[in-house]
Length: 226
Image (cartoon, rainbow, N blue to C red; front, top):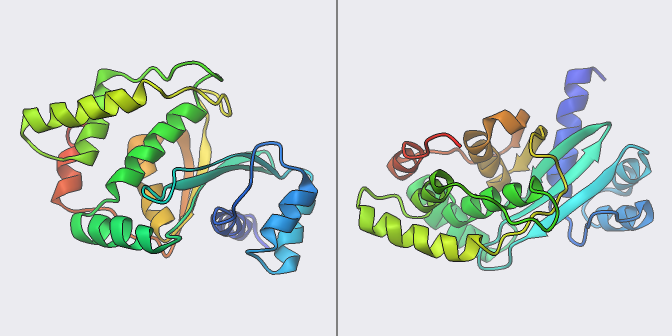
């Protein structure tokens, strides 16, 4: 198998592995093997679990109403940011239909992803130091509008939540990752590249929904540089 095909294959495996539940940083290879076999044929689950260089660095799920979930894997010395696709009816309704199909972007999950990445790359237990530009950008993603009053209200709500964010210390501030995702996860992977291009070495999407629409263009045009 060529190196290029192997890269795609490993990214596809980890995009699927992002659907797994109960993967936490420091989880034992034995537990990983049991968990992955719920989602893979036994041979593939065993392959990942038996790699000496394979580890789960962190997994986060926002909850049923938001739906965002991602897992940080390490394999062969490379860190992967694996984004889960649609997992239940709430994802299909709010993220896929009302979000991507209706407005070109899964808004709530996009902002949750932004905050999760900032927590991952902030030292453990330290407050995440969001800039005003970042808060404005996230508010614009949640509520794209040219009306400064509504943007201000959205930013105010975000600030109330964001001031509680604390670092996880999983990755350094200048970390680079391979981003991979299936379906909704592929959509989020493309958004992640728009948000943090310097943090991305490659993006692999599998049957991923695209990004677009006037709503996203308005929000992205207001992002500035952080």
